[in-house]
Length: 292
Image (cartoon, rainbow, N blue to C red; front, side):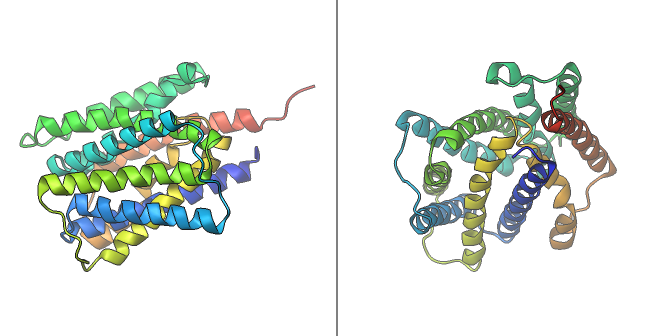
């Protein structure tokens, strides 16, 4: 599991799945599907896929730690809700950058989490996080509600905490528990949010098949996480989520006509390079043959 080929497979697989989910989600939302309705259908579909695959593959459905899964359920549900509210109040450009601030944040928390990075790696992580916050500040539309940034900031913290719990679960729990907990959280938050926003509807919509496909991709993402955390530490294992921002730019233009600014592309590119160097140095150190 220490070869560069394994790192490449883990990165590419997770990145492609996440990019597909993001593009599909954006497509159905642009075409009028309510946010919480999408969470309800995709979360329910992900939960069903998790159960069906567990039966087909003979996976255990026994929970090792109920307390950990309750914490995961709450963190994931709150994260889904905070991001949904942020999308309602902020422009997608700010969200796409700032929402990834948990990556350098987890790197900086390395010593607390049992991961040790060099001074250069920590410096690049800190610079990236400051840069993300600065980008959001300078690209902010004065008409945007500050509540949106509060929701987004809280989402960064809850997502980071959720990834910490996800890694622990991926090492101790069965694949069914790893994938079913976030799926259930997505479903519950979708139902609660839909009822609160009075947009809940059980009747099939024109994009139901895309929402179900989104659920399948959510299941695939959490399944891939089991393998990511076996070869990469927290923070670096989330690097594909940053790569996705760049990967989906062509689809953003072709499907939605969105043309990113030069500032956005430059900032995204520099952030990718900075965090990419942190990942590269870690991989190079892990795969370097021991001397003597």
